[in-house]
Amino acid sequence: ILQRATIIQEIDEDRYVWPHILDEIARALPDYTWLEEIVQVSLGDQLQFRINGRAGNNFAVTQFMENLEASLFISNVDLFSISQVPESSGGQNRAVTGFSLEARYQRPPSELLETVPLFEALAGEETPSPSGL
Image 1: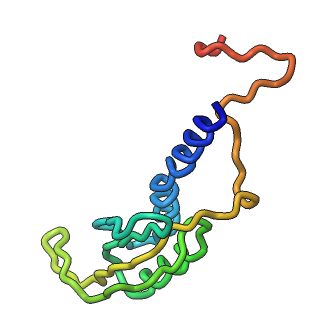
Image 2: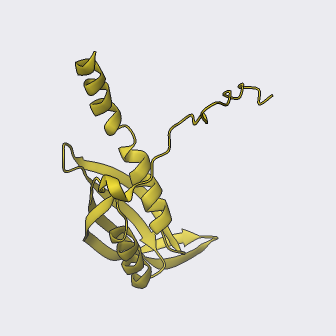
């Protein structure tokens, strides 16, 4: 039973990797910056991904990179490419900054994470029913 429980814990450990990555990317995104694609470029212990997007200017790209580096879940943020690209909006063509970044997922130290059990039952109290009554 212990061996099976260990296997289940190992599988469950990586279950929320992509939700963490996407949540951190969403938090790091500055104003006037939008994403076009997020692609996984490597597997294994060193999960690496590429973010392709556009921004109003170079400063927004720099801010995005700094915000990503501040995350507990993302490291080694590198600028893969950057260029001015035409963007059509409302019948107008504008030059915006197209960018491609590469970064890695990192597992943060467990002491920095706050985990909460899915169901918390206080000692001596009944667990509430699903209907909330």
